Amino acid sequence: MAADEGHVPGRFDAVIVGGGHNGLVAAAYLARAGRSVLVLERLGNTGGAAVSTRPFAGVDARLSRYSYLVSLLPRKIVRDLGLDFRVRGRTVSSYTPAERGGRSTGLLIGGGERRTREAFARLTGSAREYESWQRFYGMTGRVARQVFPTLTEPLPTRDELRRRVDDEDAWRVLFEEPIGTAIEENFTDDLVRGVVLTDALIGTFADAHDPSLRQNRCFLYHVIGGGTGAWDVPVGGMGALTDALAAAARDAGAVLATGHEAVRIETDGRSAEVAYRDANGEGTVAARHVLVNAAPQELARLTGDSPPAPAEGAQLKVNMLLKRLPALRDTAVDRREAFSGTFHIAEGYEQLAAAHAQAAAGSLPEAPPSEIYCHSLTDPTILGPDLAEQGYQTLTLFGLHTPARLFERDNEGVREELLKSTLAQLDAHLAEPLVDCLATDGEGRPCIEAKSPLDLERDLRLPGGNIFHRDLAFPYAQEGTGRWGVETAHANVLLCGAGAVRGGGVSGVPGHNAAMAALEDLGERAPGQARWR
Image: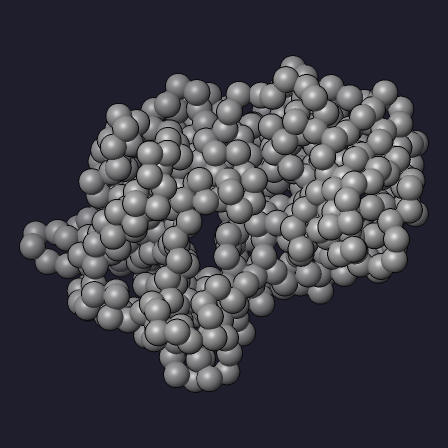
């Protein structure tokens, strides 16, 4: 059987269903607290969506295949678990190319205050947008410093979080009114507005003025990470994090059983039994607590409960390896700087609105919006020495406003059509076609792979391909959320995946909080943890 060691015993203090990063965080905390822990992972490896792989045959490039950047992972978790894991910041935040007055230009944000101010002036002709930018992100920074520390504490009430934010204008902008209102009040340039809005749309299919505020929740999680909102590159790729977590859990005594698929959970609220399937057949294991590192729909399937409303993802994920970075039409910007941050494509404010409207009407966007990240510029260790010496670079592209429903009639055909039109939007700002820069694998094929929401659903069991498992929630208590935001209808079954309150992204927060809830239920606390209120 594919387990880390020996035969899986019949009883544990905690069984964790799913060996993604959140499940591994929970396993490490519980095992370090002296509890016996079993992780059941369906795939042949742990890590879930936070893995590094070599997707191109015969090419020594280790890419973060699905999840790709780190912001929401608290340093507290890294310290508590003694993880051998580092991130590197990006000196450039973003570059957005544009055509103005018949000339190629763009907006480079980063590289110091003076350069950013000059870039705004070059694009817009005045200092006004830069000053508005400074005020707006000064406000989000103050909110981040107050909200981020609460993610690993028991859920505050809405009023408690509002008092902690202590800024009524900021609360209104982020928690009460559609984010489009604030963007339009603070900025006038269409491209600047679009750059701000993109943080509200990563993995979230919504308009700037959606009354549900799902775009606000997405925006909030994108600007509070680490108390700064900075998005960093994991050294060694995303798999370096999950490898370190697996090692921490294993070293603390947890058993990691890969190739073991949980198929059913039976519980009376005090004790539970988990049935699983492996290469040798089926088995069962008893536990005091079961922590489910899977989507709420999967939790419902395992427990036999009624599933929540279906989730739907809305993104295209593309991984590429290039022989060289392409030249830009905007010659005022160095290509290495342009690609070292977030490279925005077709993400003007009106372009984003049009793309959403077209997708909502059932059509692929005419100008698909997307953004690109070149991790190898920040962390060349993900490339083999020969590739790095020759100037090869990785590119990750994340496309927006392409809901799963658009792929249902012909996943492969629609995916290829969307990839072609997405790369055409990028080519419009390049001095050479991207295809001319693509490396080839050991069999002579271009080093490019694309994943639709349906591909992610198939490969990772993400319902509808939704990378957050469901719509993100504001990080405060609401009816039925429980004390930690991980509780379910069953007292001893906890949700430790991205679908928990304060889930989403690569954070480890749901894993931490589920472990704390389980230990608290036992009247214990994890090593180094203060007693909670």
